[in-house]
Length: 260
Image 1 (cartoon, rainbow, N blue to C red):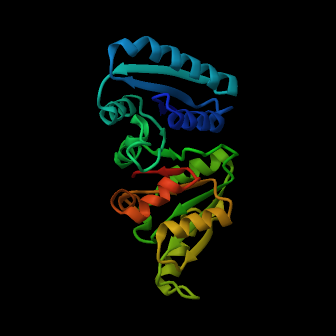
Image 2 (tube, rainbow, N blue to C red):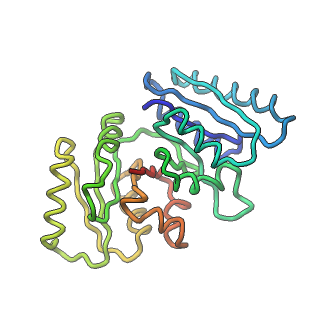
């Protein structure tokens, strides 16, 4: 995993996300971490440098081999991150998420979901209280449609990186005891695509998507949730529906948004 961008505004939200990433990437020699800060006032440049250097030392002390710092004056974080991710051909952006109220929002937190919408690179969204305890179980949410668009290569890279087990979840209020032929055929198709990883399948008859995923994550000790905004409708609903926003805002589990 090369060129992982971690934007920080030195709020507790962004620092927690950064420290989560440091623990996650410790001992990964291929990872190059880019600690990024955008400041809006020229007089804050020296403070930005000092804080970034202090954070870089934390990363090095935790065992992150390659760390660089980038700071710049600006007022459009999304545009700047978009440009940086493209220039660096980044593999991942790690960002924190704050509470729903405007008072609780920080520069990073208020822009996290906007960045996840961008089709630049995967964005790992870290809840404010999340602590890294390893990635042993990864859940992938699927609506079992257009499965040929599944990001199989990225999913397998994550599984290989963390030696994790894969759980594939489908939530549908119409599920009954047995699956119909369409679901069975699609399940077999996914098995063939990911057969070497022995994925486990779960079909939940539930009316509220975010409640189903949260319950599943708790029951199966899920450490990370993977979703594809363009392949699976979760993130568009997260951004546009109050109920599904709660999945990200209230989850203690990091959510990784992947684009095709």
